[in-house]
Image 1 (cartoon, helix red, strand yellow):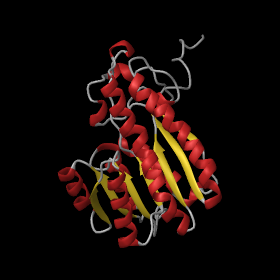
Image 2: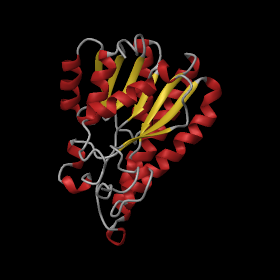
Image 3: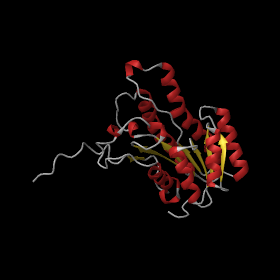
Image 4: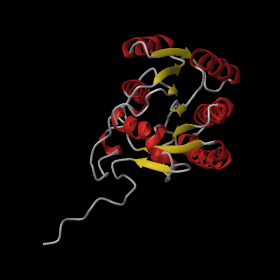
Length: 250
C-alpha cells in the first residue's frame, strides 16, 4: 500500500499510544499528514515527534464539543481539510451487570459512543467541502457478539456499530464513507491483565499486534476502499468465526 494516503489529512483519536499510535505511524508512512489527538499530552507529543514533520499533536477530550470544534478548525486552518477521521479512542473495564454502576456506564458511553458521534459531526462539513472523505470507527468484536462482564463496553461498541451504518447512509451522498472495524484481543495497555484465556479459542490462537489492526484501518481510509461504506470488518483472528475445531478425524 505504499503511498496509499498520499496528500490526505488524517485525524486519529486516542493516538498517544497503542493501536492509535500504530495507526498514526502507518498513516504517516503511507504519505498522510497526521494529527494525533489524545488527552495524554506528554505521550502524544512524544509520539508526534517520533513520527516526524508530517505529524502534529492536539489535545482532545473526545467528550467535549468545544475540543472537537477547536481541533477540527485548527486542522482545517493548517492543512485545508480533513480527509480521514479515525475514531479510535476508547475506555474498557469488565464488571458483572449486577455490579455495574451508572457512573461507569455513563463514562464508557461518553467516551466510546458520544466521542465518535461528536467527531463525525465535526468533520462532516469539512469533508463535504473537500469532496468527500473516510471515517473509520473502531468498534470491537464485543460489538458483534455478547461477552460476559462487558455490559458497559460491549453495549457502547454495539451502538458504535449501529451509528456507523446510520452515518454511512446519511453521509454517503456527500462522498463520505463510514465503516467500522471490530478487533478481537489486541496487545495494548488497554487490555493488559486479561490473560491468554481471552484469545486461546480463536483459530489463530494469539492476540493481534496493533500494527495488524492499523493496516486494515489504513485500507479503509484509502481510495482502495472507495466503494466500501457501512461495512463492519472483523479483525479478530477468527474469534467469532466459530468454536475451536474438534480433533481431526482419522
